[in-house]
Image (cartoon, rainbow over all chains, first blue to last red; front, side):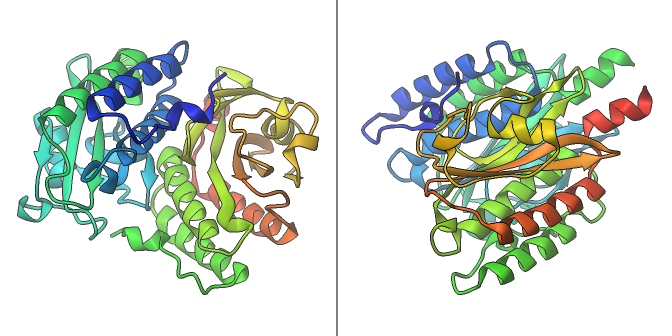
Length: 184
Length: 184
């Protein structure tokens, strides 16, 4: 049975060890479960608690969650499961850091959000951000979005590990946008 | 635009005032947005931060979120959006506090989970629990589940206010189980 301890991380692990454990736990959580809402809900909790167990800047992560593509409006992201304070419910493709990741299909690693053209400030406390797209059948179906209250909260190691997690999510979960295309 | 401050609660508000603000904010968040995933994600954040701003026992809330009914397996709950540590992904109707609420359609206010027959201990730190069903067209489509690390974490006032919130969620959001019935 899934246990809350799966997202309890001891504070003496390195970033490399923490991400290895996130990937291992995520694989176990997704085993036999393809529901995207359930998988994204547990993934956001796992990742949030993992990052906050690390030293600064990772411990200053203040929002960690997902937006997904609405099959009815395929150029719009809708708020999905997350950990943190309430957030913007819809984001157009191309707008802000999330919309840019969704439109380009490429990870956005932003050291200082105030320097990002068109940044959407849901939370004024956020200073840096990483957004990783989740692809299925060649299309972006969702994005992982993490905010940090420190500048330069994320580096290339975060990017590489988060891209692995998003690959795993893509392989494990059926998203509404993909389901809609398969039924079209 | 939605702002993170919507889920920031000053610590000098009474429980009555906090719940009034939760209902007011939830109404504003759901305005023009019927996506159940988006609405439950913001509702769990709003409620979690609201309860934790209050004195004990409310400040000891350690999990706050939703399970929903899978149209493909209508006697099973699946994990939905939440705030807290990772949680059990599926719960059968009739099992534990959540399954009992789903089966009976009635709020379960449990002062001591260890005394509840068949309690599912996702997190050993949880000592009391409240589970409120969300109905649509006469059927339970989801449940709101809140755990507290103190015994007797919830009272009749919580029950009455949370039932109002669940009514609002029901009126504002289209759930997969309802959609499936409408298309059947």
